[in-house]
Length: 157
Image 1: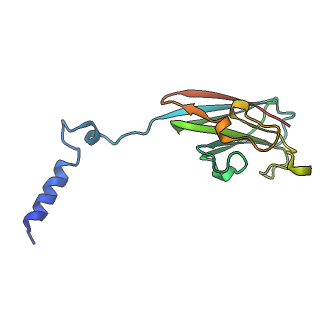
Image 2: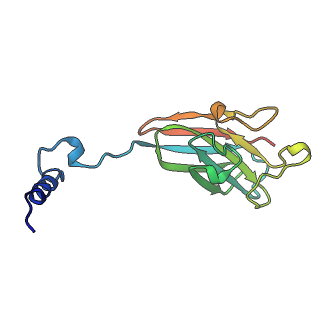
Image 3: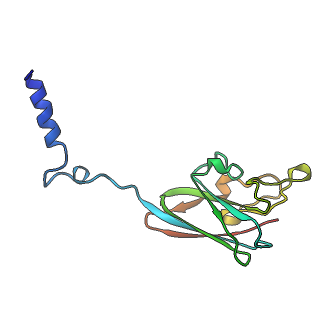
């Protein structure tokens, strides 16, 4: 079947494929999403036992307690009271970091009386509160394209 509209569609597909020279920038190559790197350094860990769980959050949902809600996660070894991790190719924009010193390996914050934390924790901008969990808006940072953002997080026990 050689319908005129089928020939027109085939010609349109060839012309809009972006394979010809001189096309607009959006036709020449797919647009790449701007990214940067986030380097997290956790300090003040009381011993090198256990691991540090690090979560990078792109919004309030789950911050900082639900690691499953983090857009990126890492489990880091502690060396002389410090833990370091680098998240590469992180999309630009607003983010916050939450960390937990998981001393017993259960991948959860151990709490005591009245829900008080029994393991070390911290968030970006050291946005801890006297009562209640840290708030995303207080811990939020901005990452620019090509930036290598260093985030230092002191641990609280």
